[in-house]
Length: 287
Image 1 (cartoon, helix red, strand yellow):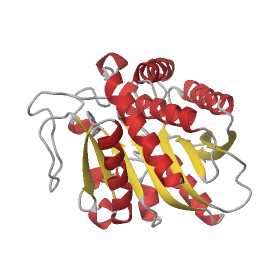
Image 2 (cartoon, helix red, strand yellow; image 1 turned 120 degrees about the vertical axis):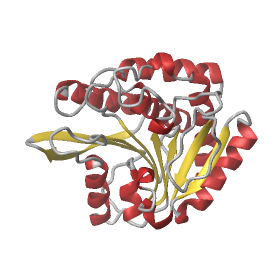
Image 3 (tube, rainbow, N blue to C red; image 1 turned 90 degrees about the vertical axis):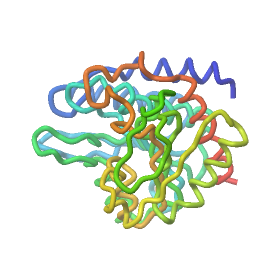
Image 4 (cartoon, rainbow, N blue to C red; image 1 turned 180 degrees about the horizontal axis):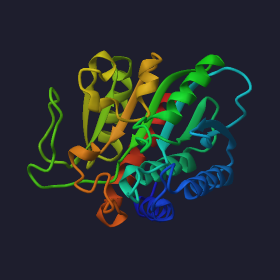
């Protein structure tokens, strides 16, 4: 995998998605982004399906990409990222970065049996109700009701911002990590310990310049609620091993949920390294 090639592709995706795309004021553009993601997965040879759900009298879609249809129950390895942005933010880091990395991972690995990619909608808090994780909650409930299970879940949540300044990394209570924001964080439940260790081992082997910090969230993250602020949380609640891969968002990125969350502040090197580490992790699990 050429890092320069990865960086160029990641940049193109972020540039395409960057812009207002919340589910209320910019509903039409959110729908456009869903179609764009569907087209990208289709071009890569995936079978693409919508997981549609209704919220406040409008329809939204989680986009599912697999090697074959979802007609029969199966056990899956899943990679996910949400494509909506919070109102008032162009959402480059949160979360065009996660979608861009997910699409590059899908391109490199290609359709594989038991591998599923999902672009979630309505992850962000909604202005009308402050509800969040709406799309992923619907998805997990539906998949469980149909008999699908998950042996590994990786959710890419804000993966583009890095800082080499001492003191740039803030931390929630009870979490121990470096105070310099130059690492990628892996937040997992107890069942995901092996997944986090595998990712860290693959990063050490293939992209040793990528610093990886892991954290096991006790009690499904309820002791540190900030560890539940993305689409991995419904998988935790359903009892599946799930990991959030994150630059820690509001604990590092000063532009989080603001109009300044733009690509110019992100690190393409960082995102390309994360892509390589995740690809190697998935290849190890798929073997």
